[in-house]
Structures are given as structure tokens and as C-alpha cells.
Amino acid sequence: MDLSVHRFRELFAQLGLPRDEQTIRQFIAAHSPLAADIVLADAPFWTASQAAFLCEEISRDADWAELVDQLNAALRQPSPAPG
Image 1 (tube, one colour):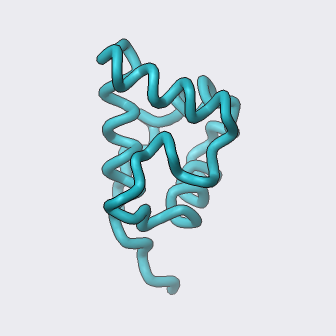
Image 2 (spheres, one colour; image 1 turned 120 degrees about the vertical axis):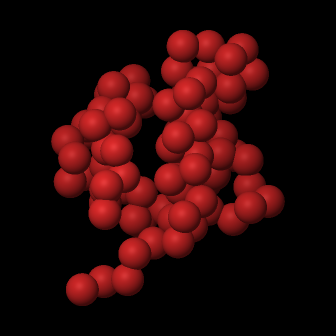
């Protein structure tokens, strides 16, 4: 399954998270699926500064907005079954 993880590397670095492919996949799997009624920036797994960054980038339609949208979509998908 290709999650286009390479696109998230810079975003994860910007969020202060490890940016290697395996860790990104683990992060997405651990936090998916994010409930439809939760705004990405309001998810409980973000720090206050990470949440502020995500919210600001989306509201300003800034440089990172497309990658934030892709991360949001990835976190809305059901986690793949183990095995």
C-alpha cells in the first residue's frame, strides 16, 4: 500500500516528528481512523504548537496546506489490518 509517505517527510519534520517512512506509517496507523467529527488540529495526539501550526496553515491556505490536507485524508482512512 502506497501512502505517499515521502510527501509527508517535510511536514513531519516541520511538526517536530520523526520523518522516516516507517515512523510516519506507524504514526498514521496508530492514529487512524480519526473520527469525522474531529477537526485535524483538534485531535488529542497533537501538542499545542503542532495543533496551532496545522490550524494556521489550513486557515491561511499556506504553503503546507496541501500536505496538511493529505495528512488529514490519510488519518481518516481505516488502519490496515495487521498481517
